[in-house]
Image (cartoon, rainbow, N blue to C red; front, side, top):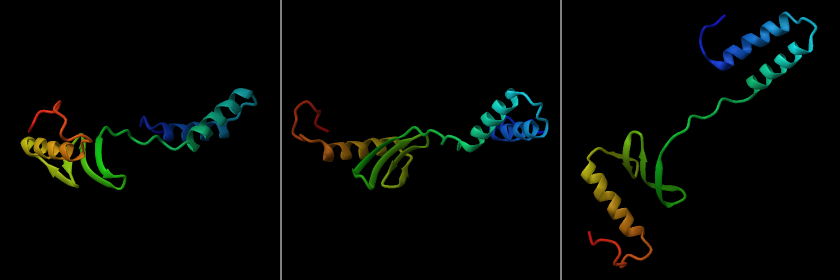
Length: 105
């Protein structure tokens, strides 16, 4: 028996016990069905927190994620350079580039 908190391994062990030691009650059927359903359900994908800016749906230009700032697939370690690249991208992709509400950079 495992001490790992892996729910899939736990369900597999539970299912083995239920199938091997069926006591004739409806409770075991219910537990068996729940364990089988849990094993049949794929584990959830890990969530990722990121912001992505694209030129087109297929072309990622800027990505901000837990590792940092990426521009056109390249990691940008320098915060000043990352800021400059972000401003260039925003200026090029702003609908009204001559809008006075934006500071002139």
